[in-house]
Length: 336
Length: 172
Image (cartoon, rainbow over all chains, first blue to last red; front, side, top):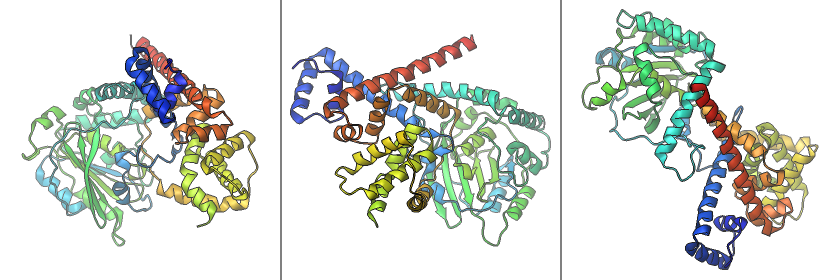
């Protein structure tokens, strides 16, 4: 057989060559180093162009119908979405509970719902974003690095381009929080509003912009853009619970409570405000990971907010607030 | 279920995706897809449905044809239901947006025939179907695709290199 043209190689890889020709090509490629290199290159081109074409699906105003099995992200799973019903945005405001002790955490739990606080065992997270930068043959770790790199630059742009205002606002809020870190906490509601930038009915403005962290956490946040993997989710009636695992194998629990017809979201929230815990301790993730799961976590943070559907959403875990915030940002928009 | 409904349910997602990738506009893509199904309704002997639909949709994009408003209303309803089912809007990060912008540019830089062949292939059309839809000879589809893929990837990677260089310059 003569050396096949590139078009024939693509046709072969696309499964479009008649069996005879395919067999001949295969036999030839097995003995011809040149052609087997061309085949390898063609494979790479096919895979890379598929990925590039798929990237077109990110269009303004949403995502066009995903190919059913393939490109559905874990956080868009049916259970997660089914966990929600629709309600008006009534005074969407978020509440941050800083929790200094287990008791306070239990309080929070009693307020939101009767929930188990158990945590699933640790496992490494899976990579979530495909990197178009990487050649298809590159290893996953390379992709991870690429993603990390470009996301830092994206964050920079985010701050520069659109969100400089809100970012400044949040910076101020965080500065204030950092100063008060070891002092009695400010009224939780005010605090929550500062964090979300949304007061009374304005749908959550927490933009995809990075939320600045109190000083001790900044370095940590830059060091690694964590990934979150949904490890479990269950639902009982109006309460759905989903467990996310961070790249440090720490579990964060998302509780999604659909409002009962007779209970107003507002009053549920109010009672939480009253139960807000009393102190904040900021720790880095390194310390958190060092602790085995079985030991009581001394710092458990909780973010509570009312999403666009009116559900009371609670994220709780032994991770800094910024990490909770990052988990929150991975949720579908109407749950944020 | 009427025939047009069956066609719609079978091919709408792929067709809209193809058209959105082609046009960069979901609403426009849905309009064209709906018009395509309306045309299918008026057509008797369609031998290969998928090739036919993709060919007509491709031509409609060229022609900006007028639409049959009455039939489109019904289809718009179906499309709405379809959207409801698919309502999953993952957070679009800036990083993803940039990937999409690069991809858009790289795809737009292709010759029209190469681009259409590639987008059809990505929707699972066979070489024969692509040849039929684009009026190519079946034997040339492989060459068309290999050229499209090579140019696409090379253009895309060139843009990435440019960006990385700019970032490195900015950093130093």
